Length: 199
Image 1: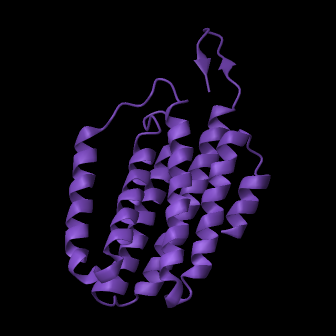
Image 2: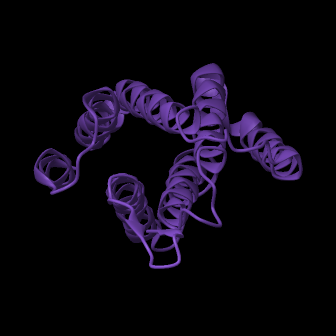
């Protein structure tokens, strides 16, 4: 996370300050969450730190959505499919959560909103950097799902490796896609001899 923070700070890409701050805060709270989750007794504070990270990502991608004209249309079939998956997963975990049921459900809903904010921030056909962000968001959700299953339901064979692998790629995808989006947005337009504007 610290390397990604340094990358965002010093990448040769112009990211406006009001975008850069929530992105850096998302990485900062993720780094704090990483440290807290090293200790099983600090699971709830770690969960809270990652919840704040997802809130920062939501703010970041909503800012992109509403400053990416025309505003990307809502993908209702994917919204309903994603909602069904989240509901099924919560119902699966609920009997195992005990006193942590409320915070875990709130966290699951928050990361669901984060994925939806990425899904609706871009025009995927003409902004290929969006795919990095979407894959990163989905892998983030998968990593957190693996943590939840391993902690509350049953241990997973090779779970720690899968969790860290999906988590690392997820964060890299979110940051790489975001910087690539702004790199493309800031690229000067060129006019062809026929008068057509080309990237």
